[in-house]
Length: 455
Ligand SMILES: Cc1ncc(COP(=O)(O)O)c(C=O)c1O
Image (tube, rainbow, N blue to C red):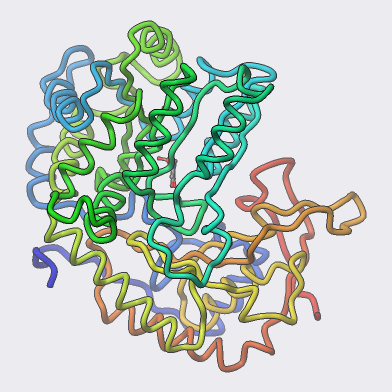
């Protein structure tokens, strides 16, 4: 059971099918443009959407809003330093700001980042700095249905080949995303991280963790990697940070905060360069774009998030929803992790080709059916077309991600999702595809407009 009870509640909107139909038309089938009060169960993201604890709110009251050298910063700094072991801790307003500092400092034209899978904001930051982002997921990641425990791993054979080969000199850093959000929320094993760390040290390349879900990764390590069965999630997390040279962190996930993040680094010279950029773009290094109260809430959240009772309850909640999804006849990326389920929309809607966006079509139909909002991870996100709209590249899989905010929804809400999804799946053949009517130059999944199309 959950190791907490509910003290404060927030009503959720309930809408009619007609209202949802009108909302879908108004937002041109782009669910990012819905008003939150048009959404009943919001599974768009687990980022900044969790419930705060009483202790976090109490810590916020104690926030010190001094511009420089606040008590809040020192509490935040000491907590992060103890967890990660990094001597240089730069607070930022959210994860992508840490990514921006790092890419602007380590990259330049012709430089490379290698990763198990880059998260999309990191990929965009690499491109903005003139670099290239190469994903090297392990071969097991290609089989969505297998129960392999660590499908988030990097392919160390390919990593070694790149580092040893002619492109080795171009590598600015290796990034390990824990857990691998772009790769189905799958975890990375400590064995894989250890090997990657050794390869990076051998080649003099920094290893950086994208640590947004470090605690969830650590939990899955304790459950799935025999060598760590006796360790606590906190011990595994501390060891993981110490295998790397630094981290970028979105505290909106495993900081269980509404805003915040940090860049942690070992290298003093690199930290100094990032710090100057931080002052120019985010704020003075003792607040980095955050209020003192935010720093305190993150510090408290970082302690709460590795509580094994919290992590177990979260894993079991996700497993409960996974059972409902499977019972509705919808396949997911197996085995489920903690922060999200990735539904195989391509398989559920075989009549919709990739460039008629089955993931987005399923997202819209689930919204219409139950007021539930998820996010497409398929060819709307990763595909490209030519100027006439003819497909050029497709995503490897057409998925719909249902992310689970921390400590926010109950199993009653999940039952509602299960029932709505079962109705959608029963009439899956009736779900129309979508075509793009308008799109921006990049990050199109956020700003495109779409219209239903008969397939
Ligand atoms: C793995 C990962 N890295 C980085 C980010 C970016 O963090 P933020 O949204 O705080 O900028 C996210 C956000 O979803 C993420 O999932």
